[in-house]
Length: 337
Image 1 (cartoon, rainbow, N blue to C red):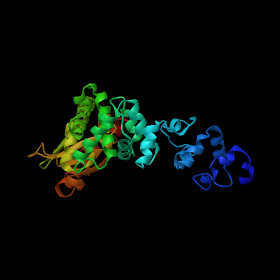
Image 2 (tube, one colour):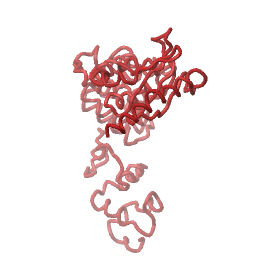
Image 3 (cartoon, one colour):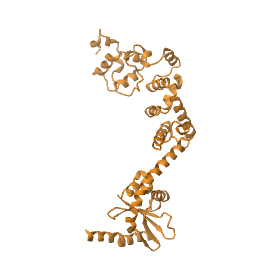
Image 4 (cartoon, rainbow, N blue to C red):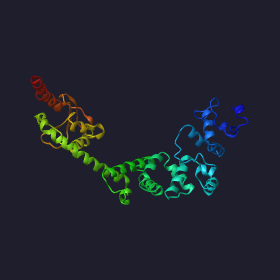
């Protein structure tokens, strides 16, 4: 390569800095020379010690639109004024792509971060720049980052484990607000005093709306499920009547029947499984054991508190129930077939 570039403009391309780096090595520098032939600013960037930016471009990585690759001088390449560039140099602020994005974006929307401020913000939000960019349709970079930093500082001990978790919570909260058609033009809605609590509230409201639809489906099923009702020796079994009952059942007994991630409620509402409550006759409203029954009338699982398996009176009850109700249903179905 040294012989090949002798006497050509490529001699000054700083190609030596990219030997054995990333996917490029001494035996194949074609990609580097291709980039340099298109964008001679590669030389400026490398001589300033910004070869990581060049390497990102070589690897087709994200540069966040911060570099003007056709710029004729370093100020235009970095989209910085001479004053900004000199301030960055004097304060020895490392020039990174995320730092440049924060500085440039703040100028665009009027936030006007000073270089040191932009560097600190870039470090705070280093893992969530992409999510942060999407939020700028709602407010300025300064206002949104100030809000998120305050929320993190207020709740870092109890709720938020990192700035990434704050940004994710804010993203989900904004999504919920749109779903609920809340007015995001109001600062009181856009920037709630307690982000975590506000998000819990929107989650509950969305969940309630979803529950209404599921409850309507469950209600339609109840008449056909009455055949599963049965009582024996102080115990009885009946179908779940609502999403609220199922959620309370799961919370009280500490098992997953009321957990949306497990989709039991959805499956029950859609008629893909049956969920039945075993209760004591003297405590009809207190969760005791929960049974999942397939649509083929096969007992899938039965659990009590903390996934405790049936024994004693409950095991006896289930055996009688199997014989007198479920097996009878199977025999009736065979005859009708």
